[in-house]
Image (cartoon, rainbow, N blue to C red; front, side, top):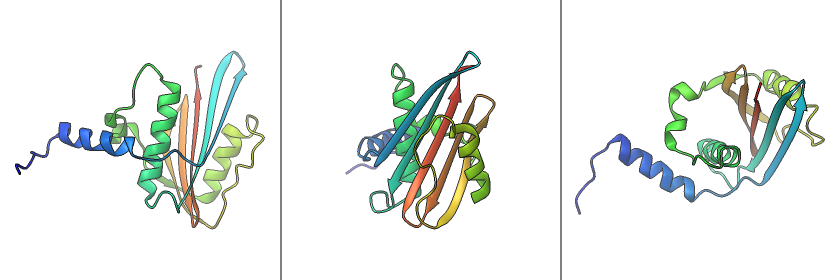
Length: 150
């Protein structure tokens, strides 16, 4: 059997193939609102560590799910995961909680608290019109996305 060269195209194809085999997060909450003539969309996704054995698998699946729901005409492509599109900055439990309350508190009637013992959290996107954070506990992964059309 001939080996394939390791190229960007091969890498993207493998990521795309893996993405199609990932399961949907267990819990998906979406909130939309109009605020001062701005449209705001908020997503909160939970996945069990029993279903997602690696944090990266949950993050990619959550990001893919939100992207495909928000951009129906444009499919998810692995290039969206490039470094310049993701911050990967570790944040504290307090910072994570404050971000959820600041950006999602008034849109959600759900309990946004983490289940289980906090382990780590990351700020994945920190733009004026878009926020994304990711956290892990001993029993779940959580992704939160906020976006405005302002």
